[in-house]
Image 1 (spheres, helix red, strand yellow):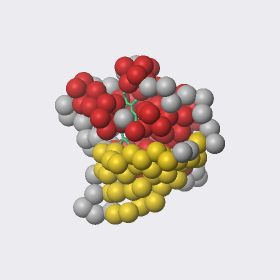
Image 2 (cartoon, rainbow, N blue to C red; image 1 turned 45 degrees about the horizontal axis):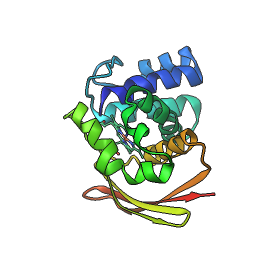
Image 3 (cartoon, rainbow, N blue to C red; image 1 turned 30 degrees about the vertical axis):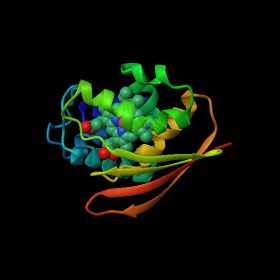
Image 4 (tube, rainbow, N blue to C red; image 1 turned 90 degrees about the vertical axis):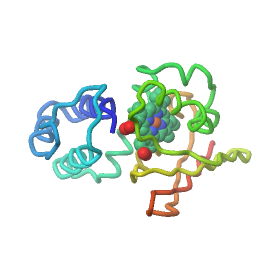
Length: 180
Ligand code: HEM
């Protein structure tokens, strides 16, 4: 998993819960680097799972809720670091429908070593966008948070739901995004 996902996570946790909790989380988590991450590095996904599990133990906030909140926060940080994708689109449905063809391929150009999810078959039907998520990692709640962060950016009110379709050989889920 890309270093930027770790460095932004640590900043988010410090901002949201303060230095002591962030420090405690790093101290108590088993990570491959002892808690040191750089933006351009690449680290085992399990390092992130361990950090979030520890934080969940410390704060008593469910794992999935933490992952979703982080995704929601990360959207605005990602487009700050890589502004190109948002300059092309004007709303959440357009942005999310083009993740596969434009947004994530731009990320791939920057870093060849990314393990990105696949977003297939976007269908817009009036105020509902349905799209299929496929990944090696069960990051549905992270995707949900990122989509919510995208809607906040475009000042839109949406509801995101997903249904898990498969867990092997990959994680596959159907997302429904409803605009109100
Ligand atoms: C609604 C918007 C977005 C959604 C739903 C989304 C979804 C995701 C998800 C779910 C992952 C985790 C990996 C996985 O599931 O396999 C991911 C990884 C990533 N995404 Fe996106 N993304 C969005 C926007 C963006 C934007 C705007 C950027 C930057 C321009 C970006 C860059 C990345 C990067 C760098 C990773 C890490 C890849 C790795 O660890 O190798 N994403 N994205």
